[in-house]
Image (tube, rainbow, N blue to C red; front, top):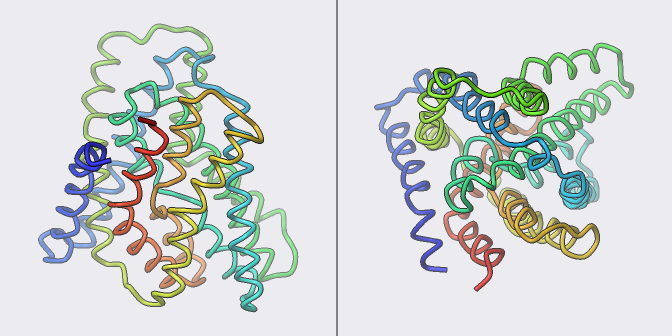
Length: 309
């Protein structure tokens, strides 16, 4: 446990450095926005494409892992939604809380950290987890918010979802890489070097951007944020573990990676969606801040648990 904590500490230290830079205004919100845009559209996309294109397709795709992670995540999503509805929250607000409870920071934190802790063999399972989050749950929250507000779904809603997926650089880079891998096209050395250099900026850039963005987050509604953080950091990995070990069993290694990915703190894009639709943005902000702080201790615990003796 101590060894895992010490290995994860540098990642959280970079997040802390970014937080300091944001809090002291050494890094302004505008600077953070541009750094995030660089990581999102360029560095992380290069890393994802390179990994997807250079790994054999049959080593990446695992249908049972996809179904197991999806089922485990849906259980937590449904539980958080039920609790929100019992508290008489409207459907859009319940959707934001469910998103906080079930969607982790897999792209910016999970991908670089788990690739180091579990070796690059973890890249395939992490990309599958990330794809499920982006395709299924990023679409689901848009459907619930728009449907909950208007009482019906329009063609425009589904068009917006489709365009959002097509324009998402993570989805595009993973898809392009998988197609490249499936066609068994060798990656030329100059292109591989280019992607390696550019993708190398993803890990420090993403972690620093997480910290800098947290500097603008509020800690309001602490009780709700604590419940959502508990769902994300404890219930989510537990549900995914139960499904992947007993209900839809998969091999130990990909199951361990998926469980570790489920233990990650609330994703920053939940706040972006909440703010865009003006649905409980402070609630999402507090959940991101609190879960990220608590994950310094909970993530090493889960990783140590799934890694075994």
